[in-house]
Length: 108
Image (cartoon, rainbow, N blue to C red; front, side, top):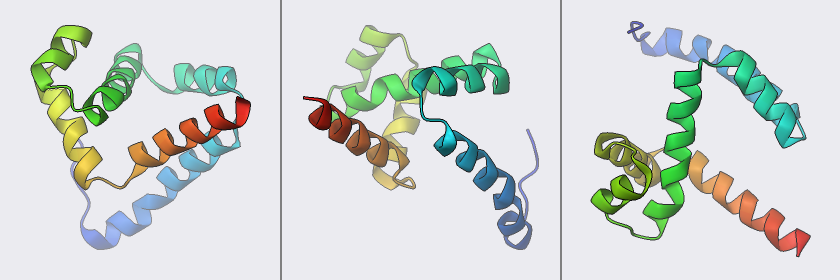
């Protein structure tokens, strides 16, 4: 695993993440984002991210971890990590959920 930078260096290391976020935000079509992600990530990384996103709606509905595991095959450890991010994370999952819901409402 990559060593974690100290706080001062961590601020400077935000620049690459911000650049990546700008690129993703600039891609308008889902197929463009998918193509970019396939170029950027390994198959295992894509599977891990898709698994995390897949359990978000189930956690929001209050489905128990074991039932989510039975439905998806995603490990209970991963489900727990996603649950912690939903409760104590940066708010990215919730923002994504809200944006998707707003787009569904607009298209109806």
